[in-house]
Each structure stands twice: as structure tokens, then as C-alpha cells.
Image 1 (cartoon, helix red, strand yellow):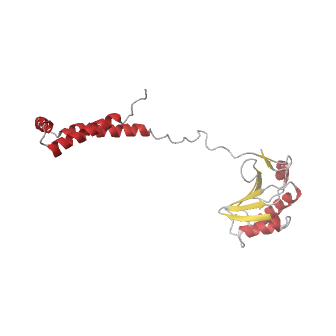
Image 2 (cartoon, rainbow, N blue to C red):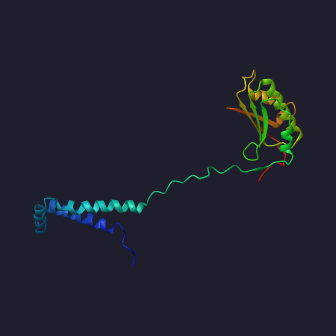
Length: 204
């Protein structure tokens, strides 16, 4: 046998309240209506409210239960966001980057994780030293397996006479064809997209 609907009892109470309201407010002449009016006088309350009130409360409670509790908010991973996938780097890249002669204030980082596996950091570099560093990195890219992207971070460097992205584009052009790079200005540096990366750069 099918289980009764959770709304059956509230519906019955509301239907009964409707009938009592009709008797006491609409009929008021039949024997049953007179009996109901006498009972109302004894209670001091309209009979339809005595039955209909609990019916409405029960209906609301069961509708809330039928809707279910809200799903709990997704919890963040206790260890923080998942790290970016690693990139397989050419075996000799780290050694070549470490051996690269760069002026003071410039350093080239090899980062297997993240969107830019090579990152040149320029900190308190004059425009002249920044150009030397950029040309050295351009020579490395021309000689070795070319990555898909190079990030250049600029920190506390004196304002150049030419915008940084123009300086980067000109320095890279000393060793790489202009049509093979795309230089993008960012808030605190420059992004370089290398349009013909070597196949040895692959994601794990």
C-alpha cells in the first residue's frame, strides 16, 4: 500500500476549516451551524481558526521538510589550491640558465610548474642592464629548445625612456625573428609568447 502523502493531514485540516467557516459565516441557520456557533461562543474563538491555524502551520513545516535542507557549501581543500601541472623541461635547461652571464639585479629562473617555465626577474636594474639581460636570454632561447612562454618580472627599476614592452621586443629581436614572438604588457612586467616552441617542452 502506498504511503500517505505528507500533505494529506494539512489538507484535511484546511478543508475542515473551510467547511466550518462556511457554516459559521455563510449558513448560520442550519442545526449544525447553530451548534457550531454555540461552540464558538464557549471557546471565544472562531472554530475555523482553531482548525485552520494548525493546518497552515503543519502545511508550512512539511513543505520545508519536503524541500530538503540546503546543500552544504563546498569546502576548500585544506591544503589550498591544486598546484599547476608540471612541465617536462629539456634536461640541459637548468644548467644553461645557471651558467648564463647576467648583469647585477637580473636572474633567470626555471619553473617546471606554472604557465611560464622561464622567468626573468629584473630588480633595481637600469635600462642598460635590463637590455643586456634581455639580449642574453634571447641568445639562450635562440640556441636551446625554445619554451612556449617567457615571463619578465620588473621590480623597483628606474622608469625607462621607452616602454618596457618595446624594450623587450627590441632585445629579443637581436636573436629571434620578430614574427616568432608576441610581447604583451602586464601590470608588473611583460609576458612573451614564443609562437614556435620546441616539441621537447611538453606537459606531464
